[in-house]
Amino acid sequence: MNNFKVFLLMGLLSVILVLIGAAVGGQNGAMLFFLISLAMNFFSYYFSDKVAISMTRSQPVSEREAPELYNIVRRLTQRAGLPMPRLYVTPSPQPNAFATGRNPANSAVAVTEGLLHLLNRTELEGVLAHELAHIKNRDVLVGTIAATFAGAITMLANIIQWGAIFGMGRDDDDGGAGFLGAILLAIIAPIAAMIIQMAISRSREYGADESGARFAGNTDGLASALLKLESTARRIPMQVNPAASHLFIVNPLSGQSMARLFSTHPPIADRVERLRKMRV
Image (cartoon, rainbow, N blue to C red; front, side, top):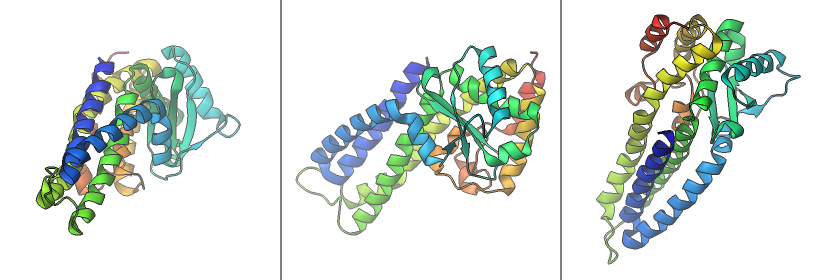
């Protein structure tokens, strides 16, 4: 099922890129952006983990530097039947975490500095188990590809907006959509990318919460951690590319009104209620 989601996502985002190309340069532009989308599909599939790590400025951490982190992850991976992922620390005071990679053998988990400082061991186990559940459920590739394409689409849309101001995208013999078409797609494209992210991201969080609680052996740690993370995320901003916000366990941009409008995460209260009703 997740393989189907990956290909569906690639197809939908490729269509958006082709539409942008058509608005800018007609048939020639559509063909050029189609070729760009093929290259991006290949790149995002094989290098999605590196893209996510780069977008969040995360740095690798050794076992000597973070022995407790390694100890917890090693124990959880054994319970989950997973290989040990690469571990990273994201330089942000906001407590948060995410997982990335195209499959369990090529996966990575990143935690912020704020997460390591705020949570107790049981809560940290709950968060790490949630991220490992994303890897186990093989849905991290979907989220990372969405981040890669959404970032590219947003960047292209910004270029088109400025280009249209200076005369790009006007009607020509190739059938370009013209000035208004370029402006319209420049506005719609990032929104479309966010809608695709929402459609894929919300349900997977519930699944990762449930699987993660089973890996950890209890629901209390993750439930308590989610409440702490939500409260702190509203007070401590995080400098992160909005295209990567859906990768995190809680929305790192939750304090911003636009982020709430395009939220890729289910309400924390709903997630906590589901966890407390679970039996592990």
